[in-house]
Amino acid sequence: MTSFDTLVRPDRYPLSSAYDPAWLLRLDMGPHPLWMLEDLVRDLDLRPGARVLDLGSGKGATSVFLAREYGVQVVAADWWVGAEEAAEVFAQAGVGDQVEAVRAEAHALPFEKESFDAIVSVDAFEYFGTADSYLPYLVRFLRPGGLLGMATPGMTREVRELGAIPAHIKEVVGWEAIAWHTPEWWRFQWEITELVEVTSARLQEGGWQDWLLWARACADHDPENRASHQPVIDMLVADGGEHLGFTLMTARKR
Image 1 (cartoon, rainbow, N blue to C red):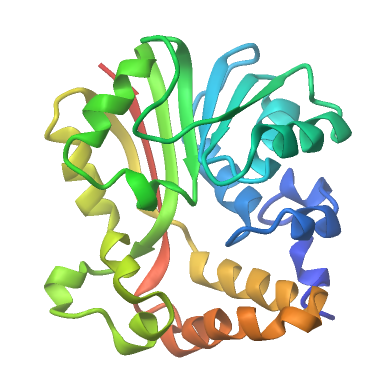
Image 2 (image 1 turned 180 degrees about the vertical axis):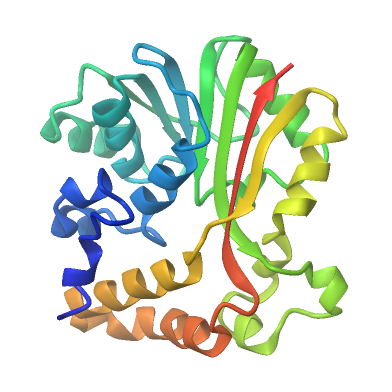
């Protein structure tokens, strides 16, 4: 079985397995986004018709998934990917009437206060959400009782506790790993504000293995750029799940 074939995994991710792996690979911007999102939403109570902000939506795979699988209305906000490019993805996927593409920076969101029933962020929060002041800023856009869900690269132990970024991780991502926190770190960071009630905080089971499967599939699918994927593959093999994974967090606005 090739690594490409391993991307269809109905035993663990039945909804994600219905999506063409080639389509997902064309939208690649990091670890497999739908596996993280499908696992994350198990801890959220997304209702059809809810207005959801997909924060750091990238090229749009997560927004398509939210609209199709949960029947929600999505605002897909990203800074790196232009709204026109994302809107084309949504139109081709048949969800153009459910998903609005917006180019927005996470610290200057162009939305009215209390305008969303839920905010979801997959593999993006580590870039903008670790500051002490960010959660208080973000929850202003949630209605009372609104839901917050976040999936981000995580660590089994804090870098501060380890005393240094492990060498095999530092070689690939450098200082960025400082923002890869444990579920316990995120729980405290959110709960201390007293603005949200954390409803789940966990490391994704087998998350590092998922990441490795995806990285190998990306390398196989795009052999001309295999060199760009190999460092991540080597990092994950060297780590073997000792330090790396994905932190999944959900909360409800008080």
